[in-house]
Image (spheres, rainbow, N blue to C red):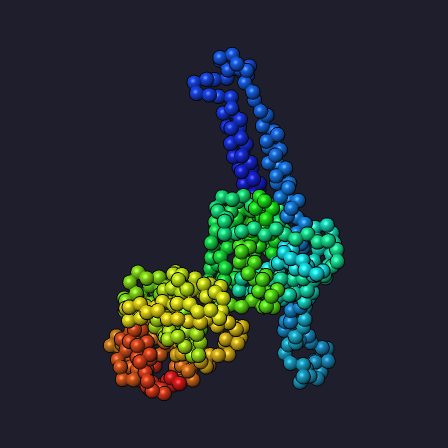
Length: 499
């Protein structure tokens, strides 16, 4: 009902504007029409009917639909999911008990169907490539592609880009297949009219209309929504089944790939989000030319300097009003480590682009072509330093996790606020920094650090805050540093290897 009201409002505005334009042709300064359709001067007035103009608007939407519908497909998938379920009991168990090899549960495979949409973006030598969302086809065992004209083809997954929620699937045919015209998403502005095309709830070839209500939207950190892209926000109705479909402009050009909605009910609430087509073009090019998507990798673990979590950092590290992202851990041997970046540095720009926060730094680095060199500016000891860094290709998450032994120092720390001191029963006399997270397999974990430890000294240097801690670590020259740690009313010494 809300979407219908939106359409009525838009059409009412169009009609009002056209009516005013039409009426303005019958008026001039100081003159007025009579009811008979002639000016008071007696000259006849030429009036133009409003209906033909509205019909022209209607025909323009028809033309967009005729352009967009044939290039948007329905994608049906089967995903095989393995789940552990409780072991079923046998009547013989009453007499003899369960068999030793039966266990308490068993694994079973389930075939889970899925529905989405896709856009035909390329045809090469009988191979037709369809762009869709990773969450539509990225884990599919079976893919079926249905065209607007009813033809069906067996699909195959070509490649995925999970960090942008994109995937490319392919089917083969010698028949004629239409290909979408791709627009330029960089030219979009708030207020532009757009149409969303897809298969919501299985209602194939559905079109809804709206406007672009915002551009450059970011996904919230900590969600399962892809974060390596910004999003186009639209009030054109997007519902389950629209994912992977097209967001088109009034020329019939695809300017976005519908991806997700913000809704408390799971259905359209006027907040739909699409991946800009210019971002998607890069994904398609890399998958078809390289067989995979390559992301840039700096080799750091970073956080935002949140005033609540890190109340003293901005003053202690002399950050002023600078925006950026704080380095807490670094992978030894990574591009950042080789260039000279260290824990405690505050990254403010890379490749000439200022860094607003941690999410933006992650997005900038991920979108930069690996293998190229970039200037990275940091704040260290209150001053700015610039390092020349050659980005590497980011490996898969599991491969990066396997490198935890190279993560230096391998823990997150925080200043001891009055609330934390009271909550953890840390004596008032005690100074130092609080260990909040210890990365599994890292040097800190191997040394024996635990969450809740208070580091008081590093190589004999008194630690009063995070600045002292990082300076002491970075100035260490030996194969290990000796630390004095307060743990549960005891003081212990821990040796942290640096090599």
